[in-house]
Amino acid sequence: KQVSEIYKNYTPKLPKKSVKIFFRTMGRVLGDQIRNLIVRSVLRFRNFINSFDKREFLSTSESIKNFFDSHSIISNNFLTLKVLEEDKHLKIEIDADSAAKDITECVSDIIKTSENIARPENFFYRLEKSSLESVSMNEKFVEETVELVERIVRKAFESLSDFKLFFEQKLTLLSEKENLLNKIDNHISAAELSKLYLSYKNMESEIVFWFPSEVPMNLLRLDLQEIKDTLVGCSKNLRIIISEYVTRQISTLSAFIIKSLKSAFDEICVRIESVEKLIEAEKWIFKFLGEELLQLESNYGDMVNWLETMMPFLQFEVDTYRQVTETRQCLCDYGDKISKERERVALEREAFERRLASKRGVVNQ
Image (cartoon, rainbow, N blue to C red; front, side, top):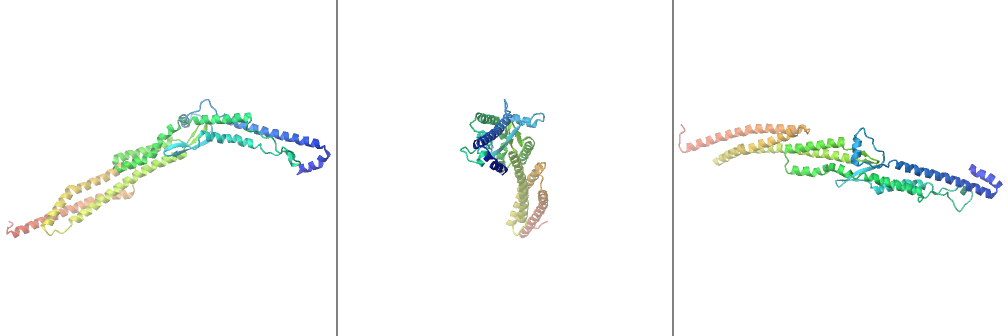
């Protein structure tokens, strides 16, 4: 407003040609200052990117080695690349072309700030050229900057050539669930399952302590936190599957043993009213004590084996211990009951034999 008032008060006193020369000169000075700012900004950005240029970029494995070595210098970086898992393979969220395009757009954004800046005299009278002269993307120093950025970015991405080779060996854990379930379906032994559990636990510890959540490289920084969390979660899920399977095995065996014992006792606790019933009861007792009871005791041994083998690795619930104790108690109790029933059947046989002898007129001396 003050400038406008000064212009109105003093310009009538000056020759029109002089006024135009003044504003044209002022526009040229402003244009040069803005251009100088743009040029310096582009050159500073160029120097910043150039600071990441090395004769040889460290590979992924070399960068990881430096990351865990407290005496090594961590490479400078500013572009974070998120590593993703897709179909059990690793991939970086953007490629070299996209990264180069995004970074070179910074140069373009700097250049654009010089565009469409109104000339100062436009506030007072119209000229054919309404804006100050802008910096062009086709100028040599701008093209050289873009070429430099693209070259360094592509060189940085080339250092990722061993990235998959180094990390994808850990991704076998993602395929392990199917392998584990197949082994469970094929009735894996407690000893083998305990080895698998221990291997998953060791693998998880290795991932937690030695799988980097990030890898600082020259210009680039690999963000592996999501992959690391996925692998740790996968290992925990595998151990949960094992824990649930073992608990289920113990519970299933316990229920089967107790149900079989109760059923057996119900079968034998019948009233013997004929010789046929007596012979049937004797055969059943002989078979149960000679075969089925031994099998149930073997099943109980399997329960204890599952429990003892996995106890160093799993924290069983109180119910699991209670099931084992109840099963053992049932084996003892029903074993005693069935032994007494065997004595009862033996007495029934003696009674039948005496009645049979009495009918035949045989005197028992």
